[in-house]
Length: 168
Image (tube, rainbow, N blue to C red):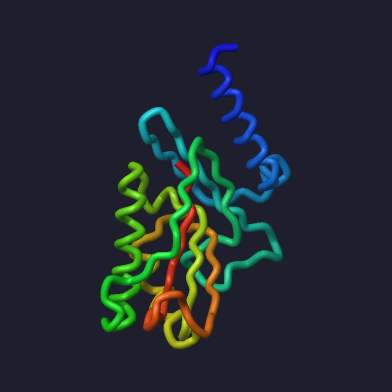
């Protein structure tokens, strides 16, 4: 077996394992939304929203689950705003802009994001603004999303942090 064939077999095995863990075959009856197809060089990315009965979204702008297929995964560490003294809408936009720079560095866009996790010091106060702003960045099918309230974050004065996972 050539080295390239070996790499291809490993990628296929890992992809199959990830899809199996995500319930790829079993999830087919629950697929909804338009599939995204992004091409990055020799890579093709597709995603579909999963919305089975009994798993409603609490708000628009995210999906209960995303079934994604691609060849690479990008894990973006928690990002925060450039200016922690700015108003919260500006801080959220700055944070998404930073995530956008990291996506762009790999040839990806927000269409490749399959999950967003946000961490908030003042979640109840700021979640409404976040729900509005994220729709300016994220695209359908919207990624899965989790928001977590916490008493503090790693950087003193930081009130929000957002991490993302993208499939390319």
